[in-house]
Image 1 (cartoon, rainbow, N blue to C red):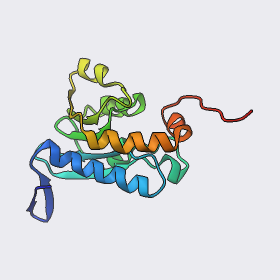
Image 2 (image 1 turned 90 degrees about the horizontal axis):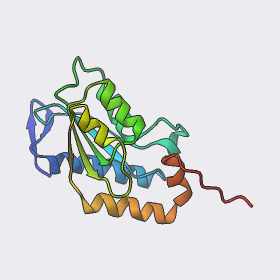
Image 3 (image 1 turned 90 degrees about the vertical axis):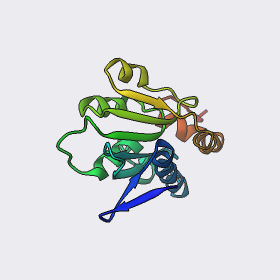
Image 4 (image 1 turned 60 degrees about the horizontal axis):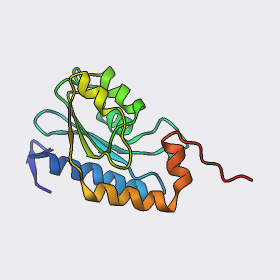
Length: 164
């Protein structure tokens, strides 16, 4: 990953570098026993504002999605129109609502094969959406889903009952 240190703040120089921050967060989440979805929020110049991961399992909090965690960790911003939200997976409707509400200008998606969220609506609303079709993002989540299908189904709001 290429980073430039400017005034003590890391800046990313391209979308692949930005996505690598989100992937690292997904891996941390997986190591904690959570759903491996990571995200990061950057300013228009590539300055990292906040990073986060899905913490639904770890915190027993259904609203602790990767995008919301990164958003919270970025702290208050006066304007989000020029920010870039990078996420390892297509944002769900909940996270798409956050993007819409705060008018985040660009969303970089690691992959949208495993789950396809509200990205079409975001495009219709004028959000720049770029899908990277990243194999590492797919592999991390596919492995998790094979091992923990019930947790995945819970995460995406699907019913998965193993009770007789």
